[in-house]
Length: 87
Image (cartoon, rainbow, N blue to C red; front, side, top):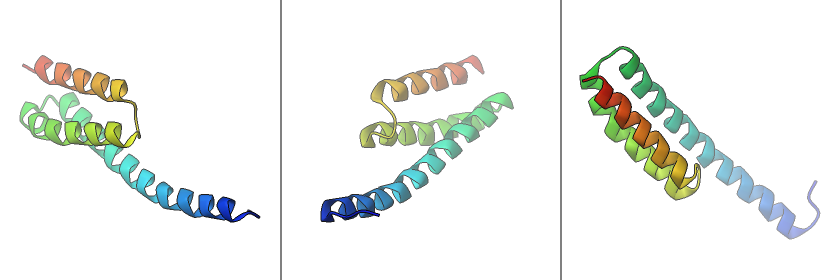
């Protein structure tokens, strides 16, 4: 159990951040999974619609520090390459 007031505040803060991080991770994973499913099914129309949501999710994740900026850039690059590969 925390003893100092700053330790108590840190616990409150981490609980609050945890909720947002879990929500963000779930949306992030959902967007990536949906895009990959569309690419695997070779559904170019669906993948084209999903790429904007994926880009938004990646940019927001990088902005909030959930993933690093270069990781977001790499994932966006690979997603676009996969979309172009569909033809």
